Amino acid sequence: MDNKMVRLIPCMLIISGLFLAHNHCAAQKNGGFPFELPKTKPNRKLSAAMQRNYDGYPAPRPEENELYSQFKYTELKGFDYHNHDGTVSRRDPSKVIFANGKYYVWYTHRNTPTPPMGALKCNDTIPSSDWDLCEIWYATSTDGFTWKEEGVAIPRPPKPMVGCRSVATADVLLWKGKYYLYYQGFNEPSGMRGDDCPVAMSSADSPDGPWTPLNQVVIPNGAPGEWDQYSIHDPYPLVYKGKIYLYYKSDFDGKPNLVRMQGLAIADNPTGPFKKCELNPVLNSGHETTLFPFKEGIAALTIRDGNEHYTIQYASDGINFNIAAITSFLPDAAGPFIPDAFTNTKYGRGITWGISHFTTVTDWATNHAILTRFDCDLSLDVNDTGMKGAHIYHKPDFYYKMGLSKTQRERIENENKALGIKK
Ligand code: AAL
Image (cartoon, rainbow, N blue to C red):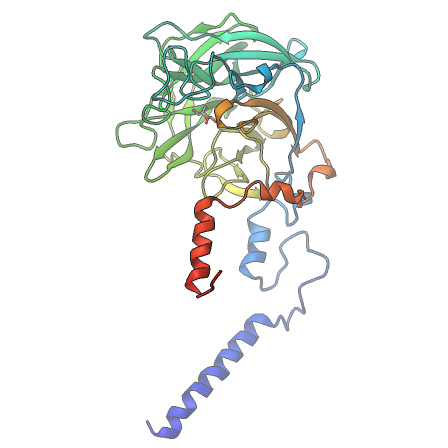
């Protein structure tokens, strides 16, 4: 190649690059993207983001996305927390159900002489964690804001039965006129290795009990080496396709941190056998389980943890979930009121409220949780525009409270030093 040719090559490359870019970017055939956001996918070249906006979400704007909502919180009346000294805790509420003219909710209840002291300091009366040495209690309400605590539903069974150390994190199923509570049954204090337990179950003819324990594990842990070999948490039954679809979360890996994902186990009867879905985990994110029938499928609040935290997801078959909305301040451990949770609906209507918990009421020394009410519009029957805004404003204080740690401050100082900046 002669010198002239060598000098020409970069010019030719630049010209062809410009030509390609022009073809890609200038929508010369269509004109610019329309000012009014098209309701359906326009027939024109679209960027990846705009394709996703039409293909990936139920509607191109959040206000019209039935699976998008903000969440608003209201303090509940009727629960005493012993001056928030950490000796009384209520957490991990079940779904809310409506029966006998009132709403019912079940939850983990702890009343111990001290706040949780960790696995090394706990004993037969001192709890290791907030959900150690607990019972399942329940409360009723006629308006969803003021609750009457009714007392214990599931006490701890005697040793060596499943749950003899603690029963926690219950959820409810109504199946052929009978009520079933599924819950985590601990036989050793949580925190010894992790938070390990299988799922136990009790049944009753009325939501007021009496509850008869099945006295056996209904959802066993996975085989050694499998993702759910140690923990089956937050058992969450729904009736779907004529069967019991029970979703659960497991904690796994642990190197360096635990990974949390959600799985599904399906049964024809409340006592099982529950067959674990071979595609498990079916949700790659989220901490506690919160799902509800929606249209032909199942929707999930994917609350904390994982790449897809703070999303609302949808699976038209109850198994293969995709992100349907991205939101913020999702309710922790939410137990929604789902009118069609057990009706075997072919077209789920969604949810507008429920009970969740806050675990951040005080500091670690008086660690406990409180129940709260959340409201939202994830319902096909409600159109609450006040829940559909895509912005939430907080005072600077809110952000400053989540400030830098000492280690982060040191790192920043070192970065400044490395630039040669002297104090
Ligand atoms: C919760 C739930 C389960 C865990 C612990 C108590 O938020 O995920 O119930 O075991 O934390």
